[in-house]
Length: 99
Image 1 (cartoon, rainbow, N blue to C red):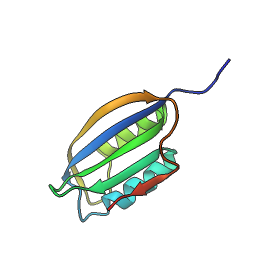
Image 2 (cartoon, helix red, strand yellow):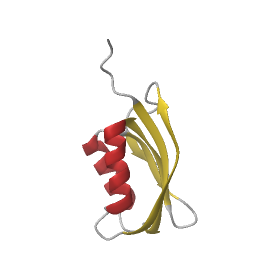
Image 3 (cartoon, rainbow, N blue to C red):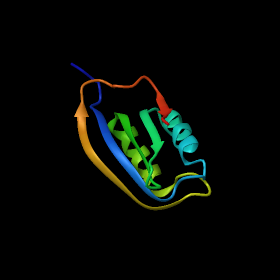
């Protein structure tokens, strides 16, 4: 009998004042604390985008953080989540900031 919890993968895009406020650094820090993997990066249109993978409950914690918390001086107007799916194994070994 397998006790492994299902793994989830979800893409996200955060809108608001999320560039120039250490958003990526805090996101990376939070992801490592929660225990999820994936990546985060700034976009040319002033948003932050990325992907989170991990056990469903941890991914949900990260989704909540991306929707409501963010970095101390950021302002999150809205967060869009897409391509949420169950995966068989993690595609990343850690959480990183992409440039």
